[in-house]
Image (cartoon, rainbow, N blue to C red; front, side, top):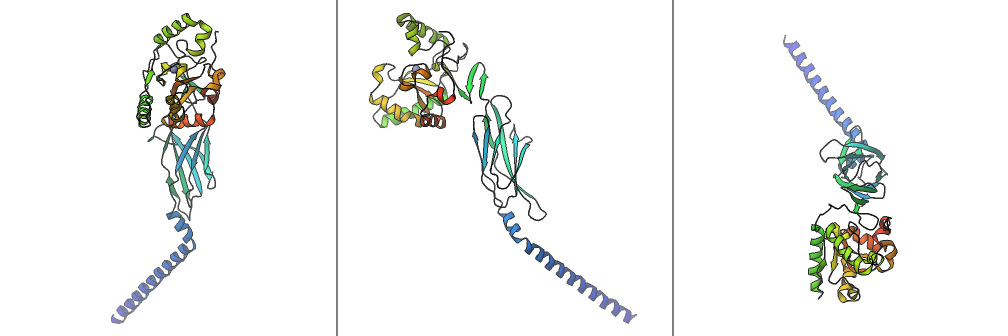
Length: 317
Ligand SMILES: [Zn+2]
């Protein structure tokens, strides 16, 4: 009995020892295995969130993202709602950092995009999402409640008419931008004020008719818009100080011309662009586009019609 107990004990100890040894071996095996993929381990840990940016092009939305170290693949997703299901648009290799979405449906839709960096180190797959990005995408030309937008930019000129009942009043953003510009101008000793802002369809109608009665239709058309064709009806345009030829060359006109884009405005009817805008030079008439777009248009050296690739001509002479 005793002997067999000792035997059992020895066997147990040996077995335990073997188990311990086996465990130790398998640990070291594991360690060795991991050693072999240590770089993958490291890169997995540094898989950074790709920073997603998007830019609207004429017929697509171009997405760009920063390289996520250790990524083997990127997956692009899109959704209409931020927290809804995202549809996969593409799977791209790790050396691709751009994707153009050309599949826009509808008009003025908001889309949310995500980019997912995928790392396939060893057997584990790691997914890291970038921040979701919200973009409003537009059809090249769309009409919303009778108002025409080209690439999402409201256009009102001799070709594109506004509906009779379109009466948005003064645009709040445009007015706020004007107030900021006005207060900054004051610091430079320049006094700016709005001589004429939002005008309703019916007011424009009476205004144009009075000019037509005074100067005749042909002449009136060079400086005044027919009802529904005035940018003033959009609430995005202001006449500054003195809407007459005597405003040109004043220090206020010069200040306005060189500073208004900083606040999101452009001089809408430039001197050399009469044929394209359909109006004679109006150094006092500014149109709000927002800072980014105003700077782009100014930098292009084009008038808004040229920039958008549209005309400004009445159908009826
Ligand atoms: Zn004006």
